[in-house]
Image (cartoon, rainbow, N blue to C red; front, side):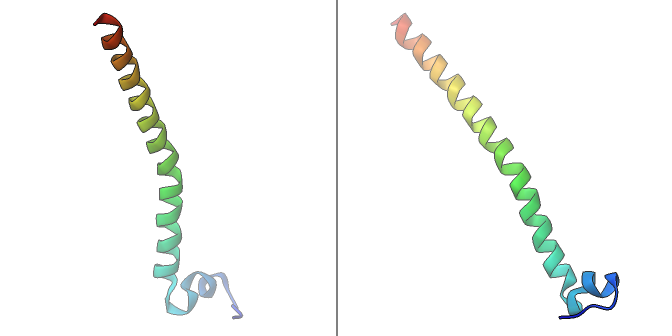
Length: 58
């Protein structure tokens, strides 16, 4: 496909909203997933520390 201008490139033959929207969703998820994984890791580590304290107290 040949584009004569940047506007035609971003329009993607009428499918630009779908194409660039898909890229946006994937980019947002790629930024969010490491942050969410880090939060889950911290929560699991905290729960393990609590569990260990309870085990040591019994």
